[in-house]
Amino acid sequence: MTIDIIFKLILIASIFGLSLVTAMYSTLAERKFAGFFQDRLGPDRAGPYGLFQPLADGLKLLTKEEIIPESANTFLFLAGPSLAMLTACMTSAVIPWGTYIEVDGHKLPLQVADINVGILFVFGVVSLGVYGVMIGGWASNNKFSLLGAIRGASQNISYEISMGLSIIALVMITGSLSMREITDQQSGFHGMNWYVIKQPLGFLIFLICSFAETNRTPFDLPECETELVGGYHTEYSSMKLGFYLFAEYINMFISSAVMATLYFGGYNFPFMHDLGLSQNVVAMLGVGALFIKILLFIFFFMWVRWTVPRFRYDQLMRLGWQVLIPLAILNIIITGGVVLFFQ
Amino acid sequence: MKSLTNRSKLVVNKQMTFMERIYLPVIAKGMLVTLKHFFRKSVTIRYPEVKRLFAAAYRGLHVLKKDENGAERCTACGLCALSCPAEAITMTAAERQPGEEHLYKEEKYASMYEINMLRCIFCGLCEEACPKEAIFLTNEELAPSVYDRKDLIFGKDKLVEKEHNPNGKVRGGGPLTERLYHG
Image 1 (cartoon, each protein chain N blue to C red):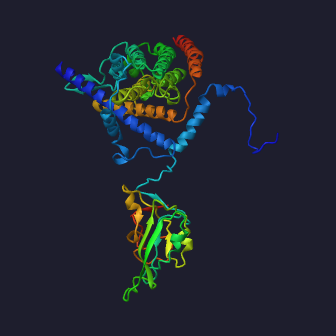
Image 2 (cartoon, rainbow over the protein chains, first blue to last red):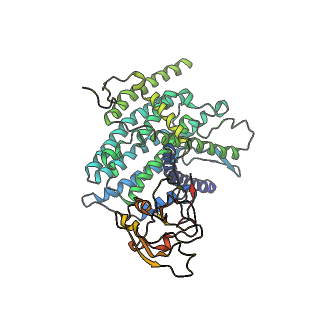
Image 3 (cartoon, chains in turn red, blue):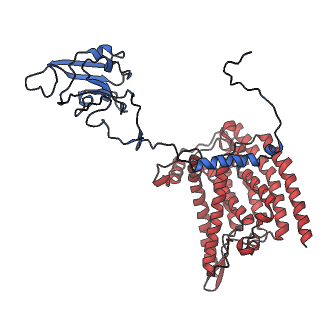
């Protein structure tokens, strides 16, 4: 019993640390890749290849002057970035990072909480994420911030619908809402029975929606510099701004993890059961496989960011309501038909 | 009306085709373009460590040349100061003493020679005016940035080359500041 609790605590700490470190180095990777995509070098002054750049950035944000506008609602102004950071870190609890490892005959699953409504939990927390943007933008008492917050809220709500509908089609196949069970179902066919093969359209919709949910280009309207100065975080400075920026990168990491888990087999990797390795080694390799998938998704997020220009607001809304939702419903009907046909 | 440049285009408000309206094919095309750039060699020159060569005709920092025996060529005739449109050059003439023949080429020389780099416009007229081929504008360095304006009045200690170099565009004995050259 104690070993379970100790293991859980270690797991929580390491997942928390890992997601922070990944988000930290995503900021560097983003700038590096931006440079590479534009035939530049990117930051390379702080340490070898610029590896200490995130530390320097963090230190800079921490030591900068903290300004709270006089007309701002102080409590909500502080609550905004905290909420954004909190919700960004919460989702990682239900993601299965690996199968399980065996210590002294104890089976220790590499997942903080295997709740049977895992997907619903993810959706609930993601929906909460919009409050960080909303509250921060409203509490700033600034027109640009408010516009950014409104945009963020309406965009997140619009795209959550099609995201949910695309997941419903997936759940119709899996018959389960537990993330671990969905991952385990994909271990067939030498660990290659990924749901992206059965749900290509659903995955595409989910992918587009996760770009909108994480406020990434081409859907970064809540914070578009050209129109709204800084969007919802115009009035923020110092580490509170850092929290907002950081939350975006954690969100990107988490949504990459969710996509990898739901559609790309999670910790399953090709021939995982055919190599004859011990359970602990397979579990560790599985964690590695999941991380490779996540990093590839993060690269994809950045690749899109430095390719596609921002959507106009009416285009964004039309895409969400008139294209993605009908497509998602069509996907549900097709999936339902196929499921019925094979019963 | 006749077009002035032949580059004007008639604006057409054409509807997007279906393939354009679903965005994804054109986005994929664009992503291929950016991916090509991702693997391309970067064009950045890492500035303080690596510096670009200037053009052959570049007019950079001045140098007072020496002849093949290592004696200063300048005779302090003052033509450079006279030709200078920015009035950046000033000098004091002195007579060469017996035994100084290895230091100064002719009987008269400049005991003090100063160029105010804050005034200089690097036009190269001093170089053209000089009858003794004593002053040139090198193509290897610029006037450095300094913290004190007084440091930008360059005397003979900084202007005269250390050893003879037949090439007028470079300073014999190396440039003032050590630097790496890269094409």
